[in-house]
Amino acid sequence: MEQREEQEFAEYFAARLEAVRRTAYMLCGDWHRADDLAQTAFVALHRRWRKIRDRGALDAYVRRSVVRAMIDETRRPWRRERHVDAVPEVAASNAEVGEVVATRSALLDGLARVPPRQRAVLVLRFLEGLDVAGTAQALGCSEGTVKSQTARGLTALRDVLGDAVGDLRSSS
Image 1 (cartoon, helix red, strand yellow):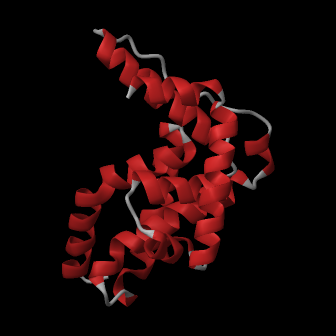
Image 2 (image 1 turned 135 degrees about the vertical axis):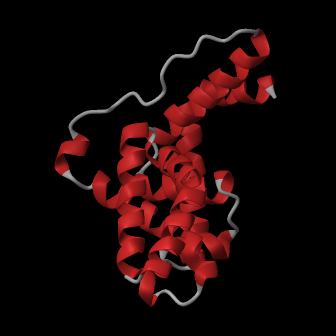
Protein backbone atom coordinates (compact mmCIF):
# COMPACT_ATOMS: atom_id res chain seq x y z
CA MET A 1 0.00 0.00 0.00
CA GLU A 2 1.25 3.44 -0.75
CA GLN A 3 1.76 5.91 2.05
CA ARG A 4 -1.38 7.99 1.33
CA GLU A 5 -3.59 4.90 1.44
CA GLU A 6 -1.92 3.73 4.66
CA GLN A 7 -2.64 7.13 6.19
CA GLU A 8 -6.30 6.97 5.10
CA PHE A 9 -6.65 3.52 6.63
CA ALA A 10 -4.97 4.65 9.87
CA GLU A 11 -7.34 7.61 10.13
CA TYR A 12 -10.40 5.44 9.52
CA PHE A 13 -9.15 2.87 12.04
CA ALA A 14 -8.58 5.50 14.73
CA ALA A 15 -11.98 7.11 14.13
CA ARG A 16 -14.03 3.88 14.12
CA LEU A 17 -12.22 1.50 16.50
CA GLU A 18 -14.33 2.21 19.59
CA ALA A 19 -17.64 2.00 17.72
CA VAL A 20 -16.62 -1.32 16.17
CA ARG A 21 -15.51 -2.65 19.56
CA ARG A 22 -18.88 -1.69 21.10
CA THR A 23 -20.76 -3.45 18.32
CA ALA A 24 -18.58 -6.53 18.73
CA TYR A 25 -19.13 -6.46 22.50
CA MET A 26 -22.90 -6.32 22.04
CA LEU A 27 -22.62 -9.34 19.76
CA CYS A 28 -20.41 -11.50 21.96
CA GLY A 29 -20.68 -10.05 25.49
CA ASP A 30 -16.95 -10.22 26.23
CA TRP A 31 -14.51 -7.34 25.80
CA HIS A 32 -11.57 -9.64 25.01
CA ARG A 33 -13.51 -11.42 22.28
CA ALA A 34 -14.80 -8.05 21.08
CA ASP A 35 -11.21 -6.89 20.64
CA ASP A 36 -10.44 -10.05 18.65
CA LEU A 37 -13.51 -9.59 16.46
CA ALA A 38 -12.69 -5.93 15.83
CA GLN A 39 -9.12 -6.84 14.97
CA THR A 40 -10.31 -9.54 12.56
CA ALA A 41 -12.62 -7.04 10.85
CA PHE A 42 -9.93 -4.37 10.52
CA VAL A 43 -7.39 -6.87 9.19
CA ALA A 44 -9.92 -7.94 6.54
CA LEU A 45 -10.56 -4.30 5.69
CA HIS A 46 -6.83 -3.55 5.46
CA ARG A 47 -6.35 -6.43 3.03
CA ARG A 48 -9.04 -5.04 0.72
CA TRP A 49 -8.44 -1.32 1.30
CA ARG A 50 -7.09 -0.63 -2.21
CA LYS A 51 -10.01 -2.43 -3.87
CA ILE A 52 -12.77 -0.60 -2.00
CA ARG A 53 -13.91 2.25 -4.20
CA ASP A 54 -16.93 3.39 -2.19
CA ARG A 55 -15.43 4.81 1.00
CA GLY A 56 -18.97 5.46 2.22
CA ALA A 57 -19.48 1.71 2.50
CA LEU A 58 -16.58 1.14 4.89
CA ASP A 59 -18.77 0.99 8.01
CA ALA A 60 -21.05 -1.58 6.39
CA TYR A 61 -18.04 -3.67 5.32
CA VAL A 62 -16.50 -3.63 8.80
CA ARG A 63 -19.86 -4.32 10.49
CA ARG A 64 -20.44 -7.30 8.21
CA SER A 65 -16.93 -8.59 8.91
CA VAL A 66 -17.51 -8.37 12.67
CA VAL A 67 -20.83 -10.20 12.46
CA ARG A 68 -19.44 -12.95 10.25
CA ALA A 69 -16.39 -13.39 12.46
CA MET A 70 -18.62 -13.69 15.54
CA ILE A 71 -20.90 -16.24 13.89
CA ASP A 72 -17.91 -18.23 12.60
CA GLU A 73 -16.31 -18.16 16.03
CA THR A 74 -19.43 -19.48 17.77
CA ARG A 75 -19.33 -22.50 15.48
CA ARG A 76 -15.94 -23.53 16.78
CA PRO A 77 -16.14 -26.45 19.23
CA TRP A 78 -14.16 -24.87 22.06
CA ARG A 79 -16.58 -21.91 22.19
CA ARG A 80 -19.46 -24.28 22.92
CA GLU A 81 -17.73 -25.91 25.86
CA ARG A 82 -17.97 -23.04 28.31
CA HIS A 83 -19.87 -19.83 28.86
CA VAL A 84 -17.92 -16.75 29.85
CA ASP A 85 -19.74 -14.32 32.10
CA ALA A 86 -19.23 -11.13 30.20
CA VAL A 87 -20.68 -8.47 32.45
CA PRO A 88 -18.59 -7.59 35.48
CA GLU A 89 -20.37 -6.53 38.63
CA VAL A 90 -20.57 -2.76 38.97
CA ALA A 91 -21.12 -0.96 42.24
CA ALA A 92 -23.87 1.60 41.74
CA SER A 93 -23.56 4.95 43.45
CA ASN A 94 -27.30 5.58 43.52
CA ALA A 95 -30.56 3.75 42.87
CA GLU A 96 -31.09 5.14 39.37
CA VAL A 97 -27.65 4.12 38.16
CA GLY A 98 -28.17 0.74 39.79
CA GLU A 99 -31.38 0.21 37.83
CA VAL A 100 -29.69 1.15 34.56
CA VAL A 101 -26.82 -1.22 35.27
CA ALA A 102 -29.22 -4.02 36.22
CA THR A 103 -31.25 -3.47 33.05
CA ARG A 104 -28.15 -3.43 30.87
CA SER A 105 -26.77 -6.49 32.62
CA ALA A 106 -30.04 -8.39 32.14
CA LEU A 107 -30.13 -7.42 28.47
CA LEU A 108 -26.51 -8.47 27.85
CA ASP A 109 -27.02 -11.75 29.69
CA GLY A 110 -30.16 -12.38 27.66
CA LEU A 111 -28.46 -11.55 24.37
CA ALA A 112 -25.62 -13.93 25.21
CA ARG A 113 -28.15 -16.78 25.34
CA VAL A 114 -29.83 -15.99 22.01
CA PRO A 115 -28.51 -17.94 18.98
CA PRO A 116 -25.68 -16.05 17.21
CA ARG A 117 -27.48 -15.16 13.97
CA GLN A 118 -30.55 -13.91 15.84
CA ARG A 119 -28.31 -11.98 18.25
CA ALA A 120 -26.57 -10.35 15.30
CA VAL A 121 -29.90 -9.24 13.84
CA LEU A 122 -31.11 -7.86 17.18
CA VAL A 123 -27.89 -5.93 17.80
CA LEU A 124 -27.79 -4.47 14.30
CA ARG A 125 -31.50 -3.59 14.25
CA PHE A 126 -32.07 -2.26 17.75
CA LEU A 127 -28.69 -1.29 19.15
CA GLU A 128 -26.93 -0.13 15.98
CA GLY A 129 -30.14 1.40 14.61
CA LEU A 130 -30.03 -0.19 11.16
CA ASP A 131 -33.25 -0.70 9.25
CA VAL A 132 -34.26 -4.05 7.74
CA ALA A 133 -32.51 -3.32 4.43
CA GLY A 134 -29.29 -2.18 6.12
CA THR A 135 -29.26 -5.23 8.37
CA ALA A 136 -29.84 -7.52 5.38
CA GLN A 137 -26.94 -5.88 3.56
CA ALA A 138 -24.66 -6.16 6.60
CA LEU A 139 -25.46 -9.84 7.04
CA GLY A 140 -25.56 -10.70 3.35
CA CYS A 141 -29.08 -12.12 3.48
CA SER A 142 -32.59 -11.23 2.33
CA GLU A 143 -34.87 -8.75 4.08
CA GLY A 144 -37.29 -11.61 4.74
CA THR A 145 -34.55 -13.46 6.61
CA VAL A 146 -33.88 -10.37 8.71
CA LYS A 147 -37.57 -10.08 9.57
CA SER A 148 -37.91 -13.75 10.52
CA GLN A 149 -34.66 -13.73 12.51
CA THR A 150 -35.81 -10.57 14.29
CA ALA A 151 -39.10 -12.18 15.28
CA ARG A 152 -37.39 -15.38 16.40
CA GLY A 153 -34.66 -13.45 18.19
CA LEU A 154 -37.15 -11.31 20.10
CA THR A 155 -39.10 -14.43 21.08
CA ALA A 156 -35.90 -16.14 22.22
CA LEU A 157 -34.85 -13.04 24.16
CA ARG A 158 -38.25 -12.86 25.86
CA ASP A 159 -38.02 -16.57 26.73
CA VAL A 160 -34.52 -16.14 28.14
CA LEU A 161 -35.34 -13.02 30.10
CA GLY A 162 -38.59 -14.43 31.47
CA ASP A 163 -39.53 -12.46 34.57
CA ALA A 164 -36.76 -9.97 33.87
CA VAL A 165 -38.88 -8.57 31.00
CA GLY A 166 -41.48 -7.44 33.51
CA ASP A 167 -38.72 -5.94 35.64
CA LEU A 168 -37.34 -4.12 32.60
CA ARG A 169 -40.75 -2.68 31.71
CA SER A 170 -41.47 -1.53 35.25
CA SER A 171 -38.10 0.21 35.57
CA SER A 172 -38.60 2.35 32.45
